[in-house]
Amino acid sequence: MKKNNKGFFLAETIVMIALVTTVMAFVYPNITKLYENFVNKALYYDQTEDIYTLKAVYQYFLNDTPIDTPIINYLTTGNEGECDQPGEKKIPDLIQLSDGKGHGFVLGDENYKLEALYITSYMSDFKDYSTSDYEFYRYLRRMKKITYDTSSYRLIGKFTKKGVTSYASIKIDNPNPNRNCNLGGDQ
Amino acid sequence: MKKLNNKGVTLIELIVSFILVAVAVIYFYQTLYTVKKLYSKSQKETQEFVDKTYALRIVDAYIDDEAKVYDSLTNNTLTENICGKYFECDNIKIEDNEDNNKMYKVTITMENGEEVVLYKYHG
Image (cartoon, rainbow over all chains, first blue to last red; front, side, top):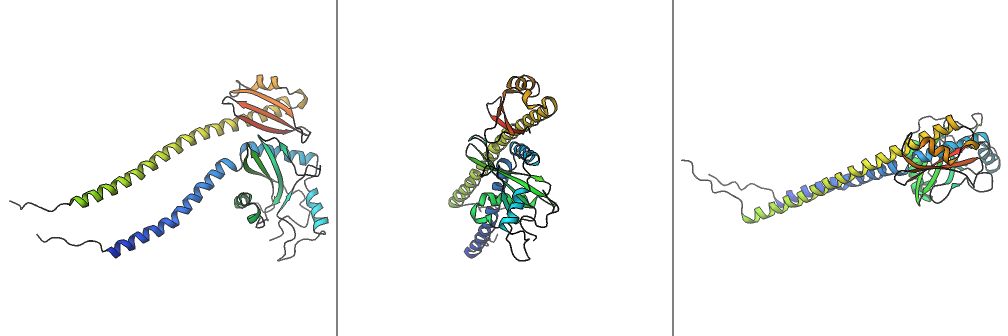
């Protein structure tokens, strides 16, 4: 019987290894990203405890301090009451809410703390946060993807639990539907 | 009778194939081990998450529906009426919030010692 001398050339082997490596190089970072997103979603985003806190805080704003006040203040002092014109962006994406004592809205201690509270609208794109606070920016981007109601506003909280930061948000009504301008501008 | 087939693998080929299989098996077992570990961890975390969410819902609903008036809430009332009746917990503590007097803090100490915090607005 004639011996079979057929086999792979070195060149064929190298080409195949190169192809497989290229595929792996594309697949691996995506899988890593997928896992990171899963961990963030499961452990650091929209935890029940944080959502209950935000609900209580929202009740406080509904009953005690009108939540629209900081937006109106910004529009009258910071932006002179003018809405953004096409192509310009003077109105910010987010406004940090205060408890009326001259600093941000803070609750709790080092074990569980609401560190900062923001209000935003669906229209915001949050690009300004991509460099200043990347983890917060990632949450904001994800939040935008899951919001489909274009008239909705959101109350966002930044929490720390024993040194670990987490984020949560609840959908709220537009504090003043008659206002001409919205946070984030009319894009 | 059919002629004996003398084709076979050389020692080198055999060793190389064993090494390849060994490497593949090592990675396969590593993956299996990771998946098993992840599964156990996720089961535990899911259970903790369910317990925590349930505790928050029960205490929140109890305060809204049963107690209603903030002044009538005491640590003993909450602990006696909720812990062991609706879910297992060590105690429920209620305290004023220093940062904002319109809010109060309810701390639920779960069976495993973990503390769950619930903030409420009392007007």
